[in-house]
Length: 59
Image 1 (tube, one colour):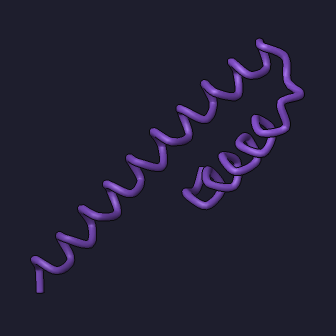
Image 2 (cartoon, rainbow, N blue to C red):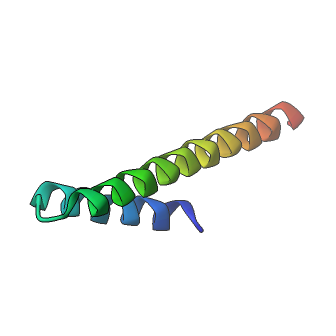
């Protein structure tokens, strides 16, 4: 999965949560998925930051 895809999915989940039309089970699943996506995005940002720092150190 790419970072932008994860962000788009998070935005979709957020809009579904804001609607308030999901069952408790569906809400639980959406929140778990959102947590996984946030973790993925944080890791991706950290990796990118490290790559940028390495690139500047090499110059």
